[in-house]
Length: 128
Image (tube, rainbow, N blue to C red; front, side, top):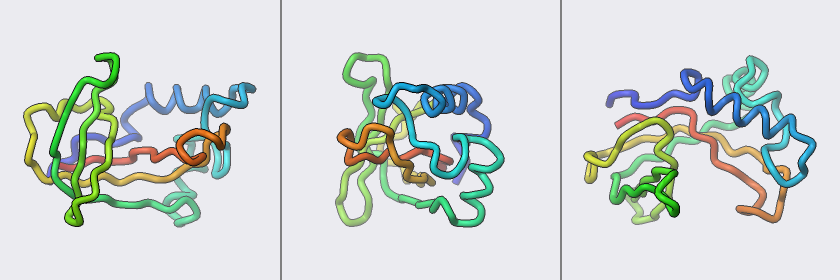
């Protein structure tokens, strides 16, 4: 499989997530539970399994440009038939319907616990 995305190469996303973490706004951003998002401390927490890395495999079954045509997303269907939706980040997967895909991600706590069960899946790497 070819690596299509790696968070360490995505300075824009890291900067945006860090701004949200640093914000005093209690409704926006991630909680700082393992160090500042994308920092050396944060990556070290992943490598030491203090911030658990998950891998999901499946097939790309749908792509679209988001609800307002501004946030491209794709649908992954795993071997059990479970369907999840993921951001395309900086990838273009529109021509990859039916392709096998793997996503590495971590789960981070949100500041606002009443949204998305209080957690966010943060994409680390995508391979297709």
